[in-house]
Amino acid sequence: MQPLKKKVGNLLDEVWAATRRLDIEAKKRQLEALEAELAVPEIWNNPAYAQEVSKKAASVRGQVEPWETLEAQLADMQELMDLGDDSLMPEFDIQIAALETDYTALKKELLFGGEFDDHNAILRITAGVGGTDAQDWAEMLERMYLRWAEKAGLDTKQLERSASEEAGIKTSVLEVNGAYAYGKLRSEHGVHRLVRLSPFNADNLRQTSFALVEVLPQIDAPEEVAIDEKDLKIDVYRAGGHGGQSVNTTDSAVRVTHLPTGIVVAIQNERSQLQNKETAMKILRSKLAQLKLEQHAERLSDLQAGESANWGSQIRNYVLHPYTLVKDTRTKHEDRDAQGVLGGKLDEFMTAFLEQSE
Image (cartoon, rainbow, N blue to C red):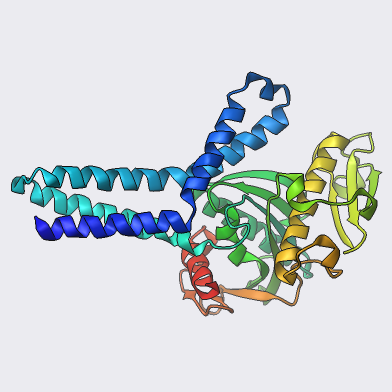
């Protein structure tokens, strides 16, 4: 019994050390504050704000509760072992092995040490040059991330989507909500390259396509990234659909330009100009936060002009012909199950990136 008691004690010490590094106590206080805010009935007078608070609470809860559960289970096991019933040792062996597996999975969260890693994420996919093939590739990536998010237990919301006329998409903007959504997805920031036999070419020739994936930390609180109104240019215009047709008859589409950096965000997804402006500002704050991280800037005024991701930052190759292989150009991690990766099997690529970034 003594070796098992020692194993449980050591595991509990590791869990306590991990919760201190992750500052779980501070997250518990944050969760209590969010839940107290949600308990006030008047918050639902502003449904949009209430939903934002609710999403934030769910994200923080997802970071806190698994550690609380693991710690409680280990403490309970210690108490049972103190009773000294040797007949329970086979059962203890099984339970300890299960708890070690849980801890191994949870301690990956120790890799999330970035400033915004515990935030939700905004994912923007843009087709490169190459017409229908590139637009189809952008839609394949959109499907890949939606499937990954579903498997990871994360919620997604479409903020903007521009479909192409023949096949695929020109752009897609997704909001990804859940524990460490940005920390998990930041490995995907950059250009993704596909090599395959083109389904849109009569001669079935080999085609190379590119798509740009931008991953941004979602900044819900405006004070996290305070933007001076005088640095903004805001244009409104009529939203357009396929073939130039009008989506609606009002000037509901919004284009926001951040003059110091030249960053432009245009949104036309909603029928309300106010909703489109709020979404555009949310994405702009996220883009500026990402730019601050990359340029190691302390203030917005220190930022250099230019977008965050660019077409020169190729990060991953997906080869479907003449062989199948997905390979990350930064970590060298690879997987020959290309269809599995396109079906959302991304965790190993993400972990390899985080381990290299430590």
